Length: 291
Ligand code: NAP
Image (cartoon, rainbow, N blue to C red; front, side, top):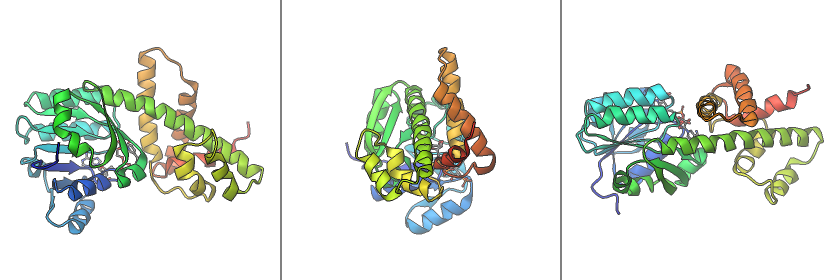
């Protein structure tokens, strides 16, 4: 299916959303962009001629598809409420933010009441994945809704997987985030030990990447961690939000997950003073641990 004929809006021009909007622009389907702070809208429109910058929610009224990539659950819900008052019946809202399953279901309820369709489609692959168009997209949707937007998602998604009905995308992302948080714990502890043992970082990271310890976080963040550069990336405050969502889901099904709980304690500490730093700043806690 081609992207031809789609008229797409995007709200949330942050670390993940701005590169996605760039891919939609390159695919010639992007109509209008919006963001909480207006500076990002002005900058994007200046660099992407022909794109409209939204001043209010009514600027999205002509869109057949609106994509959200905002921060928190309330940001998704407020945009869903606002969009429900302007979009045409039959249009589709896709949310790429990481939020709870309950939020996805509530957004769907609000929009469906006006005949508007909703897809929860959280992503994994980091800012690099967004820039390179290599994201893994975890979709909760009616099959026919996904079919309508598959080609749009493929402008930045290397893998688009239909996990089930609305809410299934966020459930999958919760599983993903336990692994991400646990890998971050292991890599941070391992590199803190490597530093303490004075191993050569130029040799250490490629050696580890060549064996069974190889992983995305070590590959993309290992070298910058050892140089104590923590530019996001993925903010500590967003990781903490995700871990609280996952803890809620684990509690609902009666699972006790110690690695998840350790990560939640660590990102609570980090978020106090370094909420906007990258999650790889976790190594700063591991360097100091002396129990
Ligand atoms: P970010 O850089 O903080 O960007 C969020 C953007 O959304 C900001 O530009 C913000 O505007 C805008 N925004 C927030 N609330 C809004 C609202 N109510 N209405 C309109 N715009 C709003 O965050 P991000 O890293 O792109 O992450 C976005 C979402 O994707 C989060 O849920 C995050 O957990 C998830 N995610 C992130 C990554 C990653 O590696 N970064 C990976 C996968 C998933 P302002 O300019 O006013 O702040």
